[in-house]
Amino acid sequence: MLFYGKEGIMAREKALIGIRLAGLSEGVHEFEFNCMAAEFGDPALSEAGFSEEVSVNVTVEKMEGEMIVTLKTFAVADLTCDLCLAPITAELNGSYRIFYSYEQANERDEEYRLIDRNTVSLDLTEDVRETLLLSVPMKVTCTDNPDCRVFHQEELGEPGEDRKPDSDWQESLEKLKNKYR
Figure 1: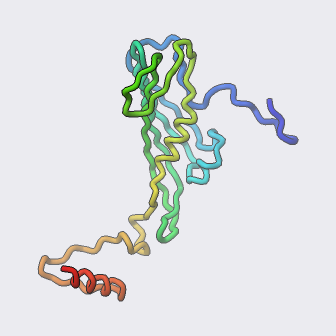
Figure 2: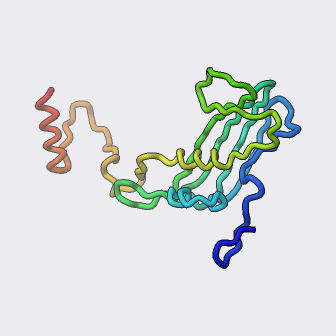
Figure 3: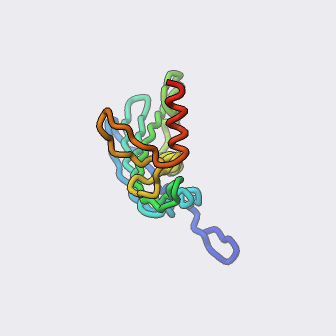
């Protein structure tokens, strides 16, 4: 136990998301993990909107000289629309593939890591944390909110029907567009 001021903090003895490799036979193995986002102990996850349960599906394909680990994350995040600042709850999915090899190999298209044959377990906690953070969209917009007019789709009219612009800037844009046709 570590002490920080008057509080005792338990040191992590066991990986939050870990796969035991000792005794794992060749072939495809699937593992399911469920934990709370707060268990990662990273303020970046809570800042990104993760506060609820995180589900992780790990597929390990073990072969003679290598292993392929595929992570798939599923979580709900509380986000804010970048345009109207309305709160949005979104289901976010992420995936990440890691190649582990016991020998040096040069031709890999995806993440590649060298691993010792005597490794007892893999700690995938950091990889899952990064996958969660990468699953957050760069631009968050709401689709149901009528106040968010930038991405609001107008109903399509008849092919020959002219639509009137709603505002001055749209009218100016139409004039520019027609000028360069």
